[in-house]
Image 1 (cartoon, rainbow, N blue to C red):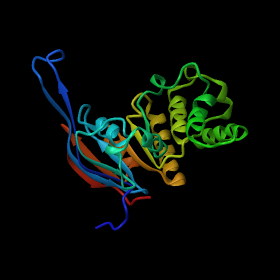
Image 2: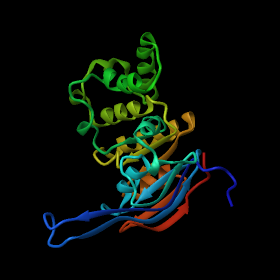
Image 3: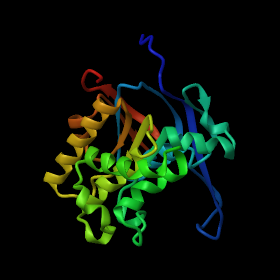
Image 4: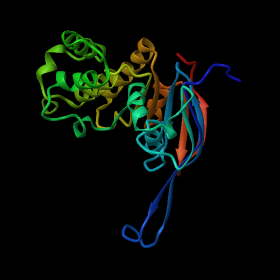
Length: 245
């Protein structure tokens, strides 16, 4: 048995959605996540696999506090994420960050790259104004983005560059857990490998715990130390892929 203290513990997690006749032929329940339990340690990258609709994203949203579970418990550093109030959500955002599939759908198209990355620093960190530009440049360097791109807007960047901006924005609050939800779907093969290598480097350098969600098992084998496969909201397979760290 592993005697280390897990950073994240998910215990018997369930998420149920209720439908009405307005949206279907009959009223009923949709069980999106059913009786899911696992631990994640600080030196691990967990691969979360499964087909579309298997419950991966719903579970991730419950872990990040975006959704309230219907049952079970999500413990982050022994704090019950599923029971915290609005005040504590602010502190949770500094610990857990999510990166979504298509950054062009959520990066502000009217803001420059520099301001997109600086915004979470403004909101979550006590950094002197004169230091913020240095922080932004360092974050861009961290995700291997040329600082000269700081004045551009998302539509002026490639898909890979936009995803690096999204990663830098997530790192700006200095999180402990990074959840990546199908972030490679819209990239070509060479860019996928570069982003995977970047995530592996950040995991080691920043001691980030990661949950990497994908339907592509080859990506999980390349990046992750452990894998969980879901189907119809349940875990159907789990296993260790390589030594942590």
